[in-house]
Image (cartoon, rainbow, N blue to C red):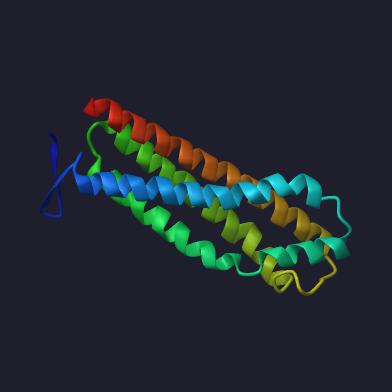
Length: 167
């Protein structure tokens, strides 16, 4: 069993604490990916709607902002998994890469999706550039879903490498 020191505390890279961190990272990543993929899979059906119909359909997303807690849990669990798994390096670097893709998804959201939400008062007010905002919102969500998928993929590789190392 490998022992690593983090802030003076000895944490075993294959301890129950690390197992729990990876489990939470997997669960929260899967839940985050589910929401992200829902947006991406809806794009082909929504992008051609009239602006009035699009605004009506967008009301289905009321309350989705409460799911942000899952992203915070995902980020924390990925960071904990990385810290507890510095050996072997493949596990650590896959965790770090997953964190990077999660951060990229958030950068897309805050740079493109959120401004569209603000400009439309969460799709309750139709500004003159509503068509442009729809495209911005839809494609930023699709790109974010791709980032979340990559984050989940790198986490899966980290878990598989970790399990393989234990056997």
